[in-house]
Amino acid sequence: MLDMHLAKLYGVSTKVLNQAVKRNRDRFPVDFIFQLTKGEADAMWSQIVTTSHVLNRSQTVTGSQKHRNPDFLPYAFTEQGVAMLSSVLRSKRAVQVNIMIMRTFVKLREIMATHAGLARKIDELEQKYSKHDRHIQAIFRIIKQLLEPPPEPIDPEPEKPPIGFRG
Image (cartoon, rainbow, N blue to C red):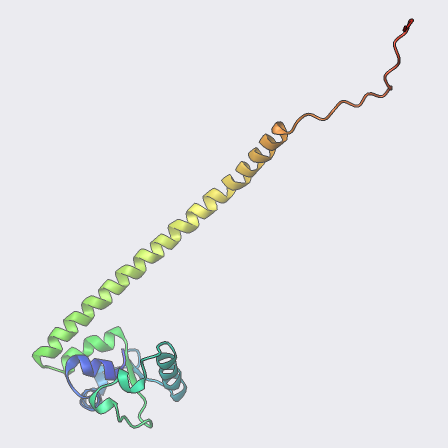
C-alpha cells in the first residue's frame, strides 16, 4: 500500500506518516517498506489516469498529497510494513485501521488460495478428460462410418440379355 493511501486511512498527513517511519527506521527493513522509482511512480500515475475517464491524479489524493512535491517519491508498504505501522502510530484510529487492514490481507490470501485450488482442479479435469475426448472422437468416427450407406457393389460383368425368343 502506498504511503498516501495509508495516511488517508489513518487520518494523518503523508508527511506525518513518513516522519513516524523515519523516526523508527530500524522497525522498517527493506522487505517492509520501499520507495518507488521515478519510472514506477510515473507508470502508476499514468495507469490511474488512463483506466478512468473521470479519475486523475488530483482526485486520487487528498490534502497535502494534492500539492505533493514530485521530487519526493511515494513509499510502498508490504503487509509486514503495514503491521509495523501500528507500533509507530498509536492513536485509537491507527489501531482500528490496522485491524481492518490485517483482516483484509487475510481475506485476500484466502481468496488467492481458493483461486489457486480451483485452477489446480480445472487443470486436473482438463488432463483427465483430454484422454476421454480422443476416445469419444474415435467412437463418433466409427458411428458415422456405420451410418453411411454401404457402397454399391461393383459388378465386374455387364448385365447380359436374357436368352430365348422375345416377341
